[in-house]
Image (cartoon, rainbow, N blue to C red; front, side, top):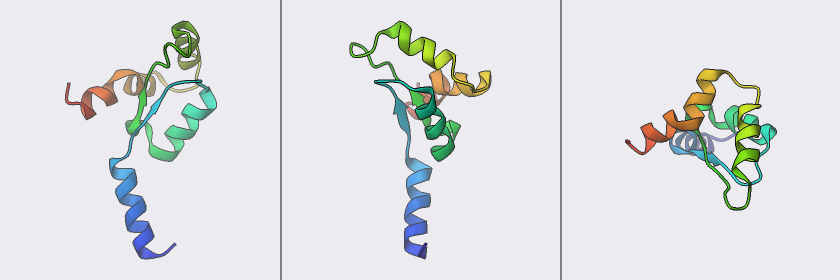
Amino acid sequence: MDKQREVGRRRFLRKAAIAASGLYRPEALLCAINALGEDRVLYAMGYPFVHPKASIDCFENTPITDDVREKIAHVNAERRLKL
């Protein structure tokens, strides 16, 4: 990878975040965590397209630690949005 591309990639990863919503899949959440890191993933509800219970159940059953789950559920959003 050339130097300019690497600089752009680092800049993107430093500022980017992703909201996991819609047709929620645990595999997609794990992929986002692996690609961007647990501090850059936010949980979002896909209502009215996805029933809240189905979305919450999938999130709660994703194999991540409670600390990571808490970050994704609200800590990351609070930090990024300065709440």
